[in-house]
Image (tube, rainbow, N blue to C red; front, side, top):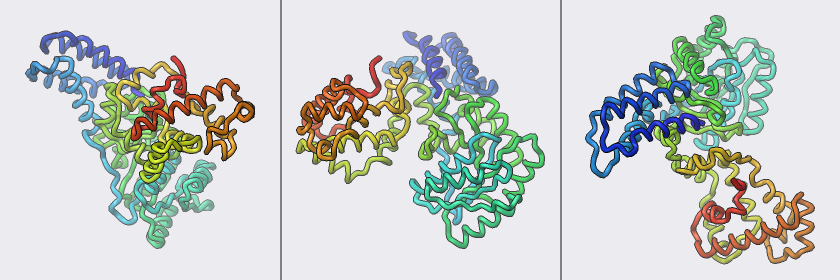
Length: 447
């Protein structure tokens, strides 16, 4: 995400490196490169031009302090303007009404049904809401079944009327049931439609008029770049939606939609999809996204993800075991599984300042821990809790069971013992710090 834009902007900033002061000449040269980088990222031309004009105006009006280099000041101006371009601050979802009704809209194939499931997961597990999903896509044969499958995975009820072909009636009946059963949030999944399809646009407008949603969200595939912005404008002119949800921002997207859509439609980006799993949905924070675009990482989001997955009481229990040198393979396996729940490993690494750039050309498989998990999975419960039992015959059996070699098992056990000693010596340090000191055990592999 944004890798090409980040590289291009970094090259642009080099023009100002070594300069003693900001002048109209060196700023103009830098901004020409910045504008070109934005256009290559599929940013709307008018948005890119207005952006660079604002940066130029601010840069030329700045007095550079002795302690601050011109290049550093310029990066700060770019950062502030990128943040403002994407909305300035996070736009929270309004959930004060009871029930809160969320109407999902968007093009065919934009991922509305999956996003409805992700939003249900978010509101149920992170906002402690009772959620009802509503299947109003009466045109796509598998849409109702897909929503039922998602509801089953989430343990969230799905309201549907399979024999009905009237989405307005379905939505109205669902809202009545939600009020009767006191659901906190109702998420209405609708059929995908084209902005040029007058009949379909009238239909979703009729659904909105019937249920008066608290929030109308427009779901858009960020892989479509500038087309996504144009489509959003057409939908907004008809629906006057409240916010945008960008999907597939974890893919090979150039970022044009994220950088342009706020300015073009004057509506905030509220959520971004960051993966295929149901939990892969993040609130959109413009400042944090600006940090990532400029290669500064996103430590705040990384910490928030960790806090969601790691239980405080469990962490204290693990700390006590480390102090007593009782940290075992079962504990290690649990920690790995918690890390994996936080999301894509390369995406997590990119949140650490400087690491994302270092790992840019390295392919990190989501199954990076697979061999370690296989080895621990091939141990008996007794062996997991008492590593000292692992003699040669047991290690040979573990190698056969995990599809690895005896040498790999020996190396892993040796590194685990070293890690236990280090963790005891530096109690309180994060597991990641311990692993980073052991490159051979690093699941990211060698360069």
